[in-house]
Image 1 (spheres, rainbow over the protein chains, first blue to last red):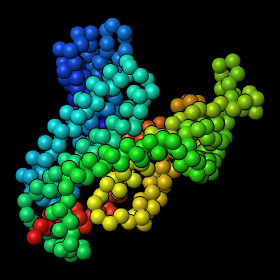
Image 2 (image 1 turned 90 degrees about the vertical axis):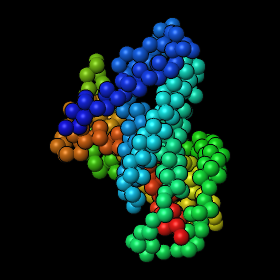
Image 3 (image 1 turned 180 degrees about the horizontal axis):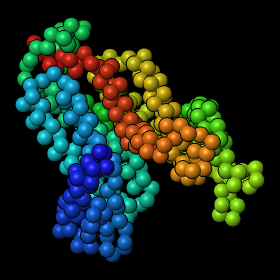
Image 4 (image 1 turned 180 degrees about the vertical axis):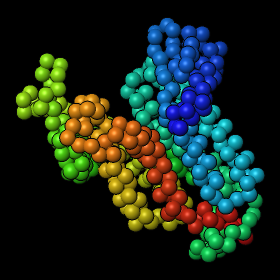
Length: 149
Length: 204
């Protein structure tokens, strides 16, 4: 079942991220090509492959779980999920493009950014979307939470 | 509850995010400098757990800087796996523990960036929970590294347990490296400040 989700949804989505990233890079760097989930510099051969964990899907799932679990009107939940998906993927494309160039420049800094900094940045992005949503949620009264204190 | 409404209403996301980034710069620098020391008790504890879980294919877990070095009970002669005693050496495989332990500076920055009175107890409690998650992560990462290193057949020899299935190990590995190091700090932070978060939806 999980494999069919990968084939039907996750892999095409990951490929589309590679296409969008290379389309954004192309006006500034004509040496870039994308095939499948790979973005490559034709001049020096350097390539990045967008793997599981690099497509932002986990972050979107975490946001959806947090929003769905929070007591709020459904219309508001759907808006924040769509907006959050966009915010996460915009940042994720920034991550892909930055890693593509960091990898060509300095392998140590690439490793730092790839393994430690960007995963935290994406999670902070999820947190900011969630906090901004909470901050501007319309006033509702939830008795259950009211009894907590 | 009233003070939580007030805390929620006065909470500035912008101020929190700016503080968070500044504190992350400090905490991540400190973590990078001492990450080998931070993971030492975890490597020692994981060694005992792995001995119990994998009596046939696991020999020892050692530390090399911030990396773990997992020794199998196998060696290699002429490109073939043979028992380590026969080969005269142990095959060992390296893995990076920092891909798990960065949850510690992330949680510290989150906690310290929160406005209001700083509670040292909350920070310590969170770090203790993160150490348990880190221990689980190091165990899973060792198992995955060993399985990939010597191959599933040699890895499972003498044992037929559900958790040594290649798909189970793969799933646990993904969950422990991709999800938990970023999710657990945020969950702990949210749980420790749940009353302020509840204040957001119970605005007076």
